[in-house]
Length: 323
Image (cartoon, rainbow, N blue to C red):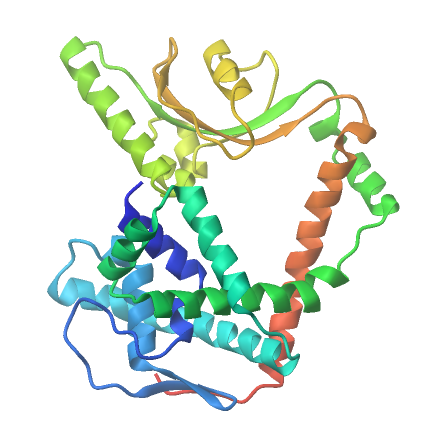
């Protein structure tokens, strides 16, 4: 895994906007100013630009001059809106007297290191490449943990699904669940050319895409960009497939995957495939899928309640945008 990509992706997730004083490692130094006031806190221009540069590093890669500036301007307002929402949630967490202790941060760091096979030295070097100190990193982790706490306490813990709702969902979607096992996969497909010399080029391209996926890039986005079949319009999504309805090579590859895993490139008579197993549904009636339906309904209910909660925080807040 490319360590700089890992840290970039993770720092976006851990609210890189919420700690002042960290400046983007690239571009000219700009005179700082307040771009938004959120209750009794401010968001500065440097914070906004720092997040745009980190979040859009791949999007901005290779762009210079006016083209790059236009991309940054397009991102300013939506990114600022996200920062305001995040700031409001952190403020609510503090109002509720929620906090984060050092052992929780240590545990989160150890979990990240274990998951991605990082030593203390490689993690420190990756942070340094992003212009971050270990103290910055710990502060951002603390904000992320605090955010998860307030979301769980104020929203997720107040969401429930009844057996009646599960039964109704099963009845309304019987075609999805009835019958034998079904799998839902995404694929990136490459047609193999007749010219054997070009086959090596296609295989090298497939290996490169597989490496990018393993480094954290979004499968659906890459499928939309590179896949050579009609599913590219849907991020490679082939929908739910019943056993026996797909190519044997695809079904065999899917059988070896757990939910969320991605295969290595493999051949079929049609061409070259990379697949991701999005979901697997067992056949055999509602009892086989009850937990899955509950999980689906809980997630949907959570998303609705979360949007309402965020809207409520915004309605009662003082927000002034100066962008």
